[in-house]
Each structure stands twice: as C-alpha cells, then as structure tokens.
Length: 485
View (cartoon, rainbow, N blue to C red):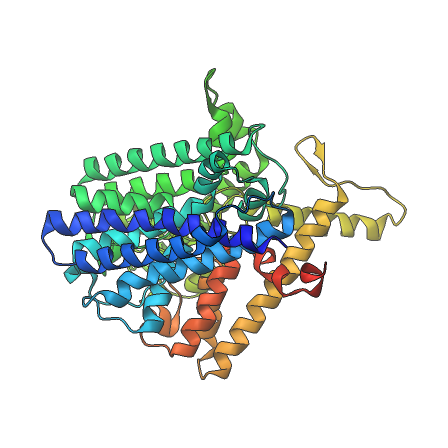
C-alpha cells in the first residue's frame, strides 16, 4: 500500500477543496451579512492541513493500484466532509453543535439533503450559498474534477474514477483518456447548471435563489434557501423547471456526452437507451398513481393543481432530490410510503441521483424473470440482454452482491436507530432517506433531523457515506482481504 503517496494526494485534494471556501466569503462581502469570517478561518485551516500532509511526502510519486484508489476515495469523502464542517463550527449563525456541523456537511457533500437547521430564511447568505455549493461539488464528485487536474501533477486517475463513478459496469469510460472523460463530465455538469439557473431566474426566482437552487437541482441534492423549500415560491413554472432539470440530472451523463458531440446533436441516443426508457416509465406510473389518489381524495381544488403537486413530488422524491412543495408525509393512504420506496430506485447509473439505480433494478427484474423461465425449462440457456447486448454473468453477480450488501447495511442502520429509541416508521424512513441520499423522511424526520439524538445522527451520517459511495467502495475496507499483502 502506497501510504505516503495517498497522504500526498489527500493533502493536494484538501488544498484544492480549500478554494471552495472562498466564494461563500465573497458572498458575505457582497451581502454584508457578517458570515465571512468563519470561511476565511476554515480556508486557512484547510490550506494549512493540506500543506502539512503534502510537503513531507511531495516527492513520493507512485502509480495508484485499485486498492489505493478505493482507500483514497473513502479518505477523500471522510476528510473533506470533516473539513466542510469547519465553517459550521466556527459560525455563530446557525449555532450548531459539533455533531450537527458534521451532519450538515456530510449531508451536503453526499447530496443527501437532510438538514438539522431550522430558520433558513434568516440565515446569512454566505451560509446558504455554502450549503448549496457543497451539494454542487459533491453531486458530480469532487474527485472527478481532481482526476481531470491531478494527472498534470503525475497522478494516475483511473483507479479513482472506477471507485467513484456510480453504476453497475465500472470499467466503461467515454473517452480513451480518463482526464478527458472527467473534463467532459464537468463541462456538461457546468453547462447544465448555468441553463438551470437561467431557467429559474426567468421563471421568477431572484438571482441568488436561482443560482443556489440550480446547484442543488443539478446535484439532485434538495437543499433550499427557505424552510418551505420550493413551496415558498408557490409557482407552477418554477416547479416545472425543477422537474425538467431533475430528470435531466437523473440520466446517465454518458448519454448527454453521446447526444451532444462535436458532430452535432443526436437525441436518438436517449430513446435507444433501456435505462432512460425505464426511468421515464417509472416517473409516469408514479405520477399517475399520485395524481389519481390525490384527485380521488379531493385535497386540491382543481385537476391542474393536483397534477402540479403530484408530478413535482413524484419526480423530486423518486430521483432522490427531496425538494418539497408541501409536506408529502401528510398525503393520504399509502402515498408517503410509496414515495419513500420509489427513492430506492433512484436515477440512472452515472447520474448525480442516489438510490440503487434504475439499471440495477432492470437487471434484478431480468434475473428474476430468468429464474422463473428456468423453473419451467430447467435445461434451457437464457441470457440477460440489455438492448442487443448479452451481459456477462460477472455483471449479474455484481448486481446481486450489491443488492445484498445494500440490504445488509440498511437493516443494520435501521436496527441501530431503533436500539437508540427511535420509532419504527422514523427509523425505517430515516435510514432509507440517508442511504438513498434522499433527505426528508417520515415521522420525526419529516421536516428536519434536528430533534433526533446525536448517536442517531452519526449512524445516519455513515449511511449517507455508504449510499454516496455505493456501499462496496466503503464496505471493501472492512474486509481482511483488502489489507492483506
């Protein structure tokens, strides 16, 4: 294990991350809200710690193997999530405890969107901007940006990319060189953010809210600058902008890359993709169920208003964003639990969404169908195909392994919360919301996580990391084989 190389890279990444603490300080100067001091202090601390890690190991340049890649990814999220908590610790408004500061930071960086802060409308603009910036950086994975830059410094990046990128097939990349791939992803991500901010502004948001919400929308994070979330704006136009860009961000970014190339625009790429079609079908079915149930219950005044609420909430929860136009936990019958379960599906592999991912769900269904066919035809040979391509058994095995590990982590976290005195519904929904990187839950965590115990917050923080790193990346560190020479 190349420990000194890992420490050197971690120091460089900390130094790079420290730059993200300067924009909120600038926002504090612009709005004169007095919140900039905490960010300057955090910037100095992060830069100093990064230098301490980098300088003694600056001459250690070794190629990263797969094991080092996994360890570095986990260290990266753990260290940067901790550094990200420093401004919350130093800030007097909001006045957060150590546990709450770490919870808020990791929730933002993992794009979970679970918050312990009450009174967002009265917070300094710098803090509000910082929360959204953390989500935006975490949405694509700061590490992909690092992969694009660090090869210039002599650091190989493929191992990091394979450990970080979501999706069942880890060896695929869009361009021959990993740096080009990472840069292409960030170009797409950046352009989508600009387009989303402009659309929000045109729809009626002020510039600050438009920028902040574009960060959390494209990252599928769900943070808002207001306690009422999207319900604060009470605008169908803003809701539709949010829905459109959530769906775009929930698609595999390799599809965007393939559709918008130097040769021109080719939208047929989307409609040929099985995962895209499955995602749209899930959204239509979920919206239809919500609309029919709400309309029959007579909660809203008109079919148009009912459709607005049903479509927005279905897309927001199922893509694991967690924005709200109102509290969906008060909806009638089975709808709240249905929406929580929909977050397990999440978005497409290679997107900024959480959850198990649509592609894995497709493969699990196809595998179940194949087993039923084998019961009827024991000697039959059935392959699992996506489009015209038969998938190797190794991919199917990996999906089943992921699903079993996901279920195991879920059960352990939920039981741990129940052991701390949390009721069943709250424990189930909080675990689902954090492991799926969703944010809002049911019961005690329907609005925020401020009232739960510190121990429960640390359990959920770990669940966020498991969800963001797709379970295996973190779980592999707990196996003896990983550390064996």
